[in-house]
Image (cartoon, rainbow, N blue to C red; front, side, top):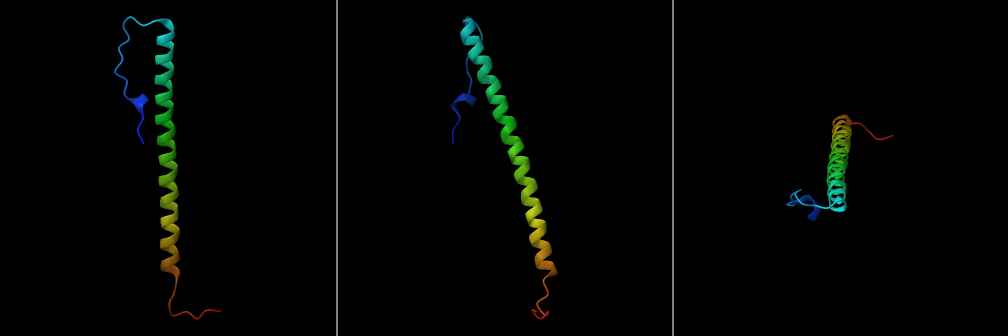
Length: 69
């Protein structure tokens, strides 16, 4: 997946008011996208850590010599 709006090679000189507004909105959108991706990454890392801990405890607590009821 490529994001074309992340590469901003535009300069701020000699731009109309509408262009400046559009540029500012685009930059805000980029920042909010970055924050959202970081937030989702943090949630996924916590979830993976929690699941790994649960599966490790399950395997550790499983006794192969215990008879099933």
